[in-house]
View (spheres, helix red, strand yellow):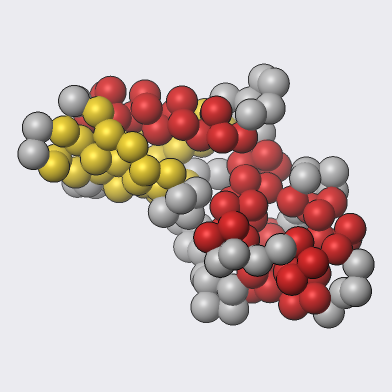
Length: 137
């Protein structure tokens, strides 16, 4: 699985962002900005053994990240998107039609595996307007 990021020159710096993960950083070079993205994501996920790789794309202004654990990467997406919208775990559970926040929190904590269908359902419970795009590169 790959998640797209954007990179562009901003003055003397390269600004890099991964909108789906809500990660924004910069570096003096493209390579340094990509290293900063990698370190930011790994620090934010904060799980032993979790690593991210960042690849500049042939497409201008784009890069892609992959990880050694897609489950942890998807759970990080859920946490970030929920936090962006100032929703509690209970709020998302309610949006899913559940009275128990435990069911949703098991997905967000990575205790339960995610299928693409379940990931889409959880993202919709976070925000019905949110429609992640998966692409082949």
